[in-house]
Image (cartoon, rainbow, N blue to C red):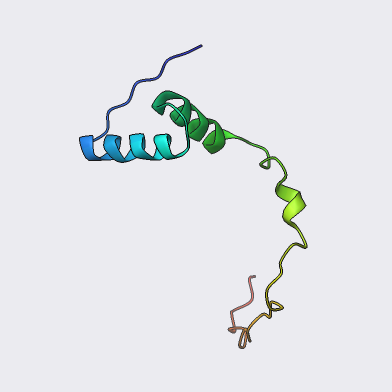
Amino acid sequence: MAQLFCYVPDKTADLFRQKAKQAHFSASKYLALLVKNEIAEEWPENYFDLFGSWEGEPLERSDQGDFESRLDLV
């Protein structure tokens, strides 16, 4: 497995370690998860299970106003 190295300010590193601890991961495992999620080219697991699950008020699109007039392309 490859190793990657990066440098961040101390304050950023401290906040990152706190986030990793809150997620119950080591800093290394948490960083690997973030990188994996960032470069993934697929939908997250169970993503489409959320469709139709809205339980609040019905969503309504507000008035979009008039379209602007543009010159025709020639």
